[in-house]
Length: 286
Image (tube, rainbow, N blue to C red):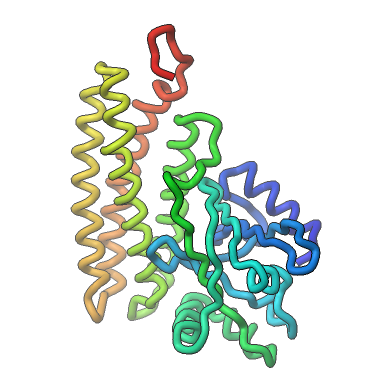
């Protein structure tokens, strides 16, 4: 796409924690920054992606079905270490160009999710590459793109809301069977939610309990809701794991999870964000 268009998307993406309108509205979107194969300069491109589980995502070098690979693909082939921005997190990743069966299966999942990929492939003689971006584990969690702890909580919550809305839409559009990519989307969401709640239980909640004893009732409720939500995600994963998963049944489980999660997120924001973003007092730990 034209550089001016890309730059507008990049600026909107960064200003709105990954949420954009126009051409990319309602799509899963990341910003991929590569190192120029010839120039050595850093180049950022907005790209659609698919979850691939295990901290990895897939991007497809379709270039709209053009006869040539896109520049970002040539860049990551030359220098596989890239930077990924999700709107909430920024992290380093290693790019792996999938080959053989791995590429074909991943591309088939993408086509199952959106037939436009097949049209792009039919319109070009080149084999459209599929690239897995594997997060490079650091000493801690990825950098959160927020100026305060409260804003970080809200940004993470909103990212879960957007992904769950996408999954609900995809399930609503599913036919008689549940597609392979949709299964992965659901499982990746459940794992991400588990990781987030585990981090809160082990990190933020004990910190707040120590610093703000008056929050104990709210923290106790939030911990109990974590257990309840974990039970709902376990039921969803069980339903998805059956060979002939019924989309209607999956939809029911997702709706149950959505209702419980929205109540939980809203309560947590009401109770914790004002405290997290309050000016530090003389006796507060920075």
